[in-house]
Image 1: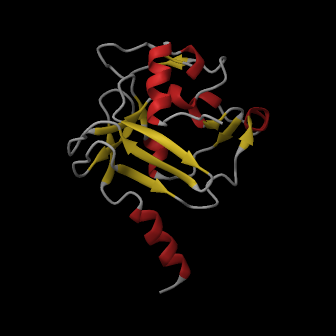
Image 2: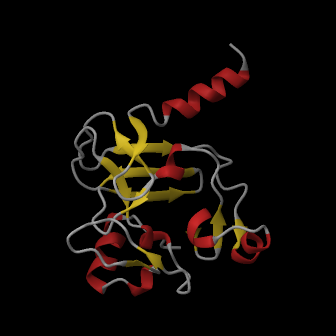
Length: 172
């Protein structure tokens, strides 16, 4: 088997039980093709070059990216642009069912609750938003929606502590 085919298989393996479909409120989203239990990894990307294209806020703006629509701030001041992976389609929720856990090799998307088959996979964008000028509207439709997505530091202290305890925010 060629190296290219093996690379494609590795990419597919990380999202084997997920699919992309339209959402009622936000374009497209990622959905569960099976049930996931709380604590189970939904996606694992341990591709060592995951962070190779990270850029500063200034570099992202110079390249013409809209920070709030195009980029993901994975640690304070460092952004990643979309790469065509399934995680590029993950939407925000003020009541997320997953959280992101990063290490030096990549990341895992971990279930914070039991997730039923065909449920949308979401995480709280505020867990990885650090620049206080990055503020955008929320469309999650959750009953207790915060209505805006903003920096982690602006979340209520109880919610910050919960996310830190779960390990789903950057802690430096």
